[in-house]
Image (cartoon, rainbow, N blue to C red; front, side, top):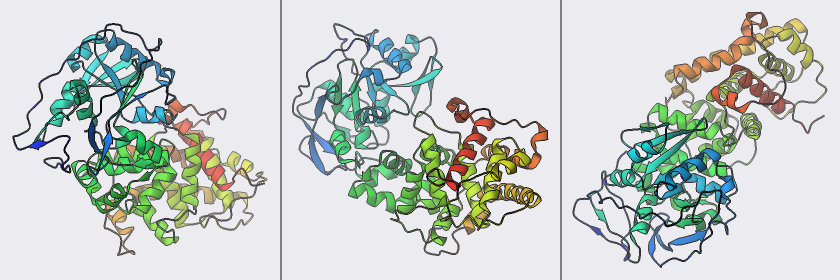
Length: 521
């Protein structure tokens, strides 16, 4: 939901005046006298004139800071090669260039960034001229996609950002006292960021981190805090609620008190988001190595019953409390998946949606652990059920008996095992249909009147069909031409693209390692 205006507490360092906001005139930065590439470090001192700004949720003053990136342990070698090429290409043409957002935060935390975002003083049309393969995308918030070494590097412009900043505002924001034009342009851009830890800018040539929002302090405190007041921030863009969950889950951070309050109390805003946006945000939570922590936080803050009511009902039915540190089979499955993934090694959405459907089918009807093992092996080997049963019967490890979804072993005969595996496959497909049926989803939490109503289905038909293909080899059989993946190494490029072999292989590993943990003999 768009909100006209930003709600800042009145502070003496800047003023908000009644006239309607107007676009700032374009500010051009003078080019530096000597231009170095990122392969040739330039170390400069970190001296800065004192200025203050509103930090966190508009509640406290913080020194604007310039920090030497090397003092923070950041090396330009940690920046991806395609990104360095784009940075160098713009710098050699005389433009200022910065890395901005979550990639700066991750470099400080010694984590591998999911991607790198660049902002430059160049106009977007000038960026297009600078690279042979580059196009402008987006209407409301246009950016450039620079194609470099089979990678897309996103580049935004300060000038475009300034125009977007003016939309919906009714006041002109003046330059804070004690700052120059460059500081003001950088500060104004950082003011548009969602969280303070994402409001950092890194000049990789001068080796300087610019911190106008108190982001470094919040990184030290392991806090997720909105740049502007949380109520205003979330009402401007409800997706920030989900991004807050995703960032906290991935980094193991907690929320500041005000951010936590409004994540919970404005959670219904996510229902106003487009379904494609919801799927994108859910993919970022589930497919990049922090699914278990994301599910825990979604449950803790009352978002799971809105997004995934079927899984929320499972938590309620099993007595899983909001702040519970225990685990269960659903969380264990995603914990095993998280060990295989990372921000730079994601999976296709068909894998995590398939795991949700598989678990729901087991929750509906607990199965013999041998049936589950044979099913996962049949998925892996392309539907050769006899081979899967033969391997499963030779398992010499004990299963995890703490899961309610696993029944007591019954020493089933082969024919019975085949029928049970086929029945489980049919149950998974039926569950997939239920997960994409608004009426069924709306009934999931009907037994728990204290929970909010939700009939939200954000899984599109194309994704549903992709997930069905993952399991159809079990029911159709190996004779239909399904071929097992060879070797145990995951091809992450293919996994991200939704390769059936890679998805089936990874699914089988996750299920098998959950039912038969490595620490059991």
